[in-house]
View (cartoon, rainbow, N blue to C red):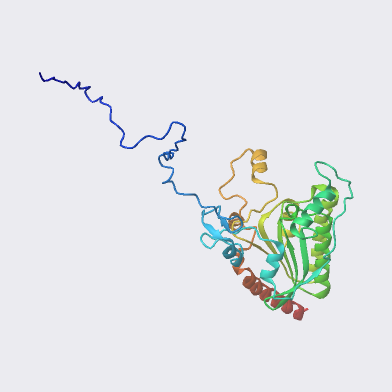
Length: 317
């Protein structure tokens, strides 16, 4: 008699025999990690080396540093004037190898034994090492567009271009040399004001420089003052504001006290553009705004005009 067999269906739960013999129980099985979603598709951020590009704070353009240097630190897109060192400014203005520096080794001393947060002597050494300058101004005799001139250029990188005894003395000696040699004078200013570390000695430089300029004017010799960003306080209240011609770079901030101090003192809203070169030109404090790239040519034009006037005045007696 035949035997009948039945297969029990488990409704999809049947066991399926593996096609390959499984590894022994002791063998270590390795499995590739499943990549996280999006980890392989996300683009890697490119690292831009520091010191190659500068972002313009006015127009947000990324400027190649070499192009910025070649353009005298002026943004080619929006014309914003970046800070520039005193040595760079001198090289941009005077004829090659014509500049003869004066009083190059003169340095400040701590006459008040100023301590404060940091000793004054330590500050001086720090900034001398950082800027390769002895103090905040470089003075000398050079040639600008064929005219022999006495030239003084301040550098904001040295203690904010503050005017101490050395700055005042170097400028006074330069002015006296210009008077003695019968030379026109050009002073390019950038400063936060008097140097607090020297107290009253720094304030005395205001009178000293203006006194020397009075003798220079008495000889009917021209003086051109160039104001750059920023020019404030004791410098603006003395030699920077008494030029026969007062020029400024575009956008330069110029004044005695800062806008916040004035607003808090007067309790009044300040007009738009207050203390900018454009605002001061409109109100008659300065004579012209000259872009940095045009400064050398325009100075040559003004020197030609002023020296001709000087010669005419001398001929008339």
